[in-house]
Image 1 (spheres, rainbow, N blue to C red):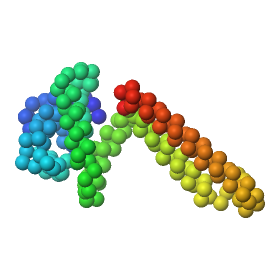
Image 2 (image 1 turned 180 degrees about the vertical axis):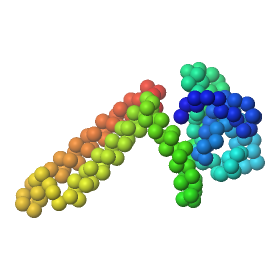
Image 3 (image 1 turned 135 degrees about the vertical axis):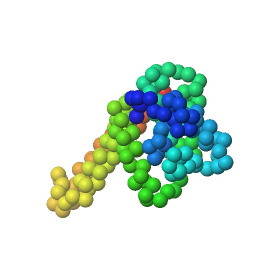
Image 4 (image 1 turned 45 degrees about the vertical axis):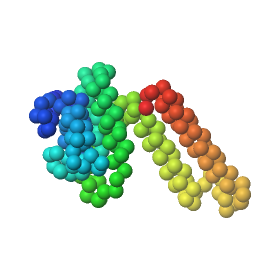
Length: 186
């Protein structure tokens, strides 16, 4: 979520530059949190939030609109390090309560992602999931366009047609994803 005001970094006590938000909802300067991770005593593992001591398993970029428009070395460095951190530690097993504590921050970021260019990719993925669920409900439903009980093997044709349409739709979405990735959108 882009910052609207100037958040204060709890590490350097200045305004957060190239802000990064932890999964627990605390915002830091990008350089401060990356330095804290790389030079801390546990640099091989996930860090604990400097404010609340909860394990940080996900860092979320929280740049201001001005910072998003600027292409600086500092911005590229912060983005690269945040991606590296997330690749290494976001898949770590965690207790159920940690997932519940992360909900407010992650749902807020997810909601805001839907209204960006990258959010279109999210909507494509969501549509694939909805299509799979609709197809599953169609298969387990006793109501069919062409019932199998009456028409036998011919009754399965509508089921195969649904599978074919779903497969085509998924390949179209994947093709769009590959094109966006090649163009540098994703």
